Amino acid sequence: MYKMLKDMRILDLTRLLPGGYATQMLADLGAEVLKVEDPWQGDYVRWMKPYLPGTKDGAYYWALNRNKKSVILNLKTVEGRENFLKLLREYDIVVEGFRPGVMEKLGLGYEVLQRANPRTILCSISGYGQDGPYRLRSGHDLNYLALAGVLGLNGERGGPPLPPAVQVADIGGGGLMAVIGILTAHIARARTGLGQQVDVSMLDGAVSWLAMIYAQLAAAESELKRGEGPLSGGDICYAVYETTDGRYMSLAALEPKFWQAFCTAVARPDLVEKQFTRDPGARREVEQIFRARTQAEWVSFLGNLDVCCEPVLEPEETPEHPQVKARKLFLTLERPGGGRVKVPGRPLKFPAETEYPDAVPPGFGEQTEEILGKPHLREESAPPGENKLGR
Image (tube, rainbow, N blue to C red; front, top):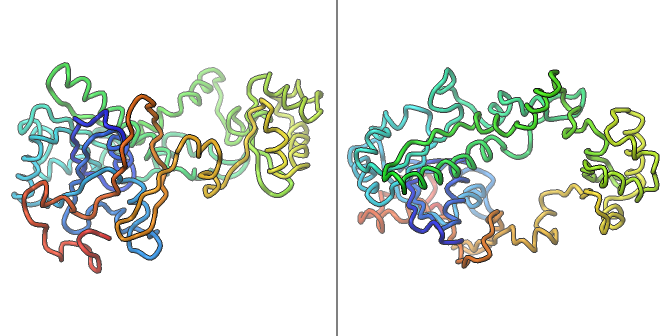
């Protein structure tokens, strides 16, 4: 972890992916992130399958909660709310992922938080935002992508829409937008001395990621079809091709110089002028070219050529790729009970900054006594069959 944001102190009320990703990114940069968890189950990902081998530890929890602390508070009680408001004296950024109106029902709406500390920044992450007809509607990543227009374009020509393997709306529309919003409000507060609410909608964020798509619509004045866009399989120079061993290569030779270099490498100068053709015959010819070699042979053959062509790796292969290893994109965390957990690390690099050891995700309420000066809540507050540290 780095310590550039060491003066930033965050109360994290979120659960699951979007908020966990956002606050972990800030914690990786040095912010002190305190997870505020309810007594009955806390962050759901603690207990969700899949478990780490030989444990009841949720693997997802370990991927989203390093460098944080945890306290247990029952915000449905007067004492819990009072303790939360006391924490605002030091922790003046709050991140929550409830449906709109839940914070108000808890007696902790933004007006209440601001009265307790006018510098408070409240970042509210929700599916559809704090207003609009869908504000109280339930939803998940797939729903937001469906409404944004992403899902309708994802898949093969003539086939059904296919869910992406990565939660684009949750992470890109929710998590990353929350980080941007929090940092923006933090900078503004340095100038004004006042906090504000940041309204993050996963649908809004997903729509904003379609800037290139809507630019195409504006230029063409016609509908886009699944599998037929220039960057979604329509052009033969930008597509995925199967190799003779059933693996795949990603070809992204968009600029003419890259496409020409590819055509020269495979001794097919006749294809140079067909770079952006939609001719099925030309596509079949490129498909046949790729089926002439295995994936490993293509990697070797094109390794020193500037053609924008890379192998499609399986997730378990990625950590071993030389570029990924050189960039140290994975961290290995040591579990207190023994064993190691490999997780994606920090995507941001600051060569001039000192890197410090990463802390493992906190146990359930692990810092309650330390931070609140009170003993841990009773053992029965933990989910049945689990100890209060969740390890």
